[in-house]
Image (cartoon, rainbow, N blue to C red; front, side, top):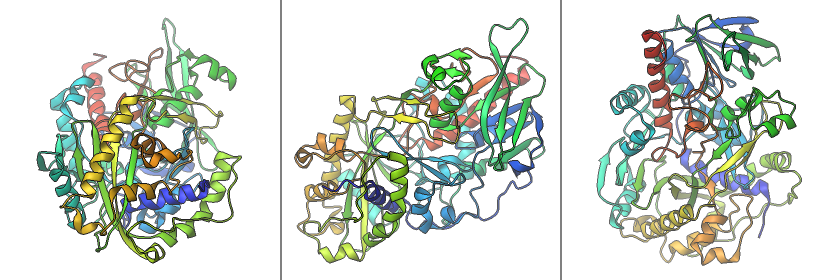
Length: 578
């Protein structure tokens, strides 16, 4: 069994490239060029009512909303999602994964579990590099979070007016949809943003003309006279002071660095209601808390960081929804499709699919690009000089592996999940990824959901509805066996994986980029997302989630930014906290 990490990354990116394989270009014009500036143009010192750290999926919605009643600074470590060929051109997807420069839109990290992952480094965050699926959280999730359902719905609608659309369902997606219904994932709920058990067509952030819309588009709602966005601005530390008579340290500003290495200070204007808000994502927010002195004392001390608040729960509760997939070569042409159809099962596994032409020789061409990354990231690894690919797939002409192939991917994502891990600092450099452990399938309930999900995928592949897109004499089991020849991660392979779905799930697990946790509600922040132990600081993003909402969290993360922005402004107008 070949275990080269360059092959692993290549296969991983290539199979998942099906998810976004011919997405047309973004709009080339930023709608907010009047207030989005390179951080090199920032004064040495600036003052604002609110400082939002992170212009990602939540931060853009939050900053746009806060600007409707206060002066806001939004600090984003990446650039605009316009004009970058690695974003605007579909052929640049693999380059996004391979690009490790400080300004790349997707920053690679490999968890200690041996699974490849990425974090957004661009205005719009993950919504600028993902597969575009848009679906709300369940009503039960909203209730459990203690959110006001009416305000939540209004916030979703506010987001949807800018970024969400109904996709056009073609043959491949229709076959998967009909196959899901045929094997019992019922009822069929048609097109809806709502999270409903059964099979449905969800939303997409690609408009009818094929242009991607990201969370950055929500800045079109901002008051241009009350918001400033600094790009390529890397926050180094949140600043705190002890006020006279105050029992807790209070955030009063941040120190950030531009692309030339110059330092800038941004302070909160005078006023007890002004705040710093962390929206740097599930890796960035706990990392920044630690770099600012809030976190496990032992860990902070090891890095020479002044301990402001000994908070052992920072970085805990890290989870990534495990994904397992089956690559399905098709005897007939398939459309290029992103995630459009989803089966929301009663056993809490979500079945999704994507399709498009795929050239396996292309995998070889990009393999070399990943070799250096694997060596740099996972050193010491022994990387073979040759890259080998499967010799064939049962029932399929082996020559097809060397020509452009029509194919699709059917995947399952485990809801939740129950399994959790942790995040640790590797250095005091905010540009360096922290060390993350997700503990995939540590909880047996997650493993059981995966097994049931893979059984459902097998049934869909062998259903009558899907038969047009399956080669004769090719079984679901043979396709799963082929997946075992693709080292999609750096985990060891076991012979029993071909007969045990439990082992198959463990050996072939991948990410669907829905990682969360690290600053969870009730553990690091309260119900109003204020950080325990300090004043003037909140965390509002996916790091606060205990479970990932819905089939894809991006809609809910955007909603949360809007929801909390409105709540904060309401408190401001009311004259205090509530």
